[in-house]
Image (cartoon, rainbow, N blue to C red; front, side, top):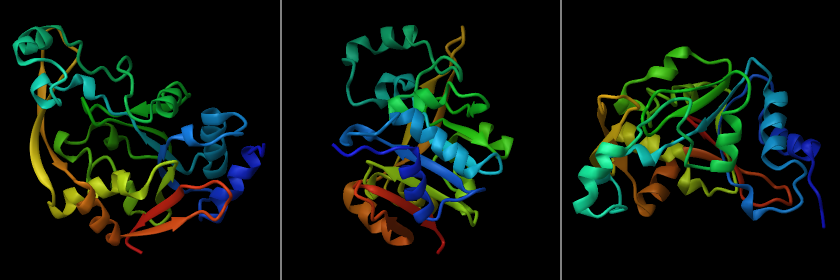
Length: 237
């Protein structure tokens, strides 16, 4: 069995244009690979070492369980919605686990100097050099280039996908927001509070066909390493 170490991954990232000072939105699912020495810990620490403290490592830490039951895909029967609302603990920046790319993102949240934004569903975690305003963007701008993902406009910024197809990239969601494409829906989520506080916000829903079309607005580079499904996406090139 072939094995892959920190040095192997570092070279893959360098070949994709990632360097000291790069700002990265990482979406990673390593379940398809074998022989990775250190798995997610190795991945996170390799990127931190490569980009340094002048760079930025960002990951989505979404918490769909904080959504109002009316905004979910019928996880709970209608007759139980009132009871669910009365018992939802709500979003807490420290206590609520991430439910997207869980193994990677929940490990990342334990690292020193990682800070999580305050959106009750679409939060992001940041390490490195970033504008602290990213931690408190408007609730309607979490999945947009003028909100949580505004750093992706910068020259050294990219979306690194590992084991994730480009069509699933959060940059695609951000483009749909920028161009107001797809279906706009209103969602509501609960905050961690004794008074059952909620926040409502708009979200663009993107289907597979639109995702493929929106990819034309991005530069997509695929690694030529023996590990498949490693991509870098960039905006405005």
